[in-house]
Length: 144
Image (cartoon, rainbow, N blue to C red; front, side, top):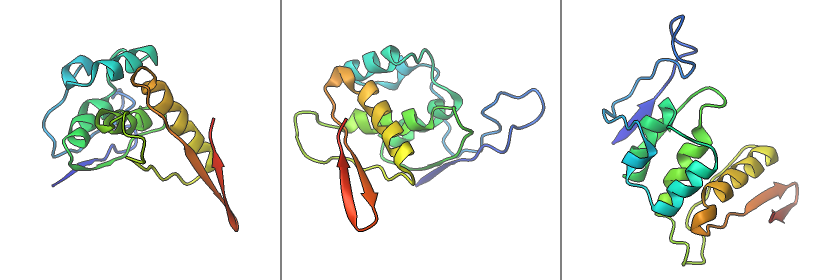
């Protein structure tokens, strides 16, 4: 099953900045508290400054957590990174010191930004995250 979220531009004039959302996922969750997330993850979400999920988060976090394939597009600054980071952190066993998730990013800057978000959201869980940065002819392992 695939859930597709495709905001088109900014949508009609006067519409919220997240744009028009096409989705075959019907459930919209208005609060992080209503997503049945781990308590330590919720603490990290609120400590990061989130008060309420954005439109993309309201629609994409639950299907990701439930194991559906999700294709999500939204404008910059709408919470896409936090959406998949929250979904990953909900499943991670922090007591298991092994690779449990891998996120591929097209640039060093984006990889490091994702790492910072995962570490911040997962802070109260004791989650760890490492950015592995590829270079021509070698692999540079960056731990911050």
